[in-house]
Length: 383
Image: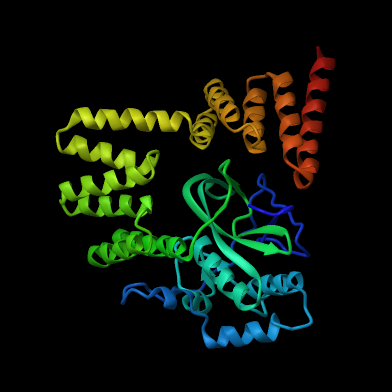
């Protein structure tokens, strides 16, 4: 991000102003129950302009509630956020499967991170706010009902406000990779849209429409590795193995460490009897995973869930070495140390988590640290 100040808007909460920090150790509030899907993406593929078009009713509401000449850009931004989430506005609800156009999002009042970002950027620009789509290669999210989720690919919105910058993200419990959000073009954002729709149609068994969506995705961004990977999966399903080889090679040409493409290509070569190439790609994938702090963290979380705390410590320590600024990793390591009775190292890691967590998390981590110190003192006095 550019600008002198980087701020995070946590849109799952009430937002009184720009300086709102996300709490990545706490689960998000329960999602608002959503109505049945009223838009099913089975018809003609929408054009790029149709994806981003603001329907007349929403445009009128935007002008009535947000676009007022006397308001500053900061005030318009706040009003826009209220419009999107307020019960008297759109009352938008989250749905992981809702990769929708702006008009469909308005109609259904539901969106995933991508649909929300497209909606927000379209409305913000109409309101005179400098906003753009941003891409993150990898994220880890924390959810109460689903545990920890590792995801390759995430988008959010960036806003520039007179030299300051803000990140507007529908998911408040997310840890970005070390590079953080990067601004992308409209074409790249639309490549994500068409790729997501293609994946949904492929999962539903509509392979003809899925292929059309993947082709449209790659037309928007020929270097979009995820699009090539999904096209490779589709070609593999349809028995077009040589075409799938080309697809996966294309994905890896543009993103040599694309884990899904490495895994899918290795499996394909095994199916084709080329065990040497399959093993070569499998070794590359293992190296990518070993260098990926998110994968190491997920392996640690899995070991912790299985109560293999010694193994969890090894994975968490590796995650910390690879990404030492992530307070969540230190917190995981502290838990594992605590479970094996190493309260000294557990306390040290809790201190690091507290120091890295920022103002919004310091109180939470301090409370955990105080509890750990009380437990330690009680055990010392009992001896």
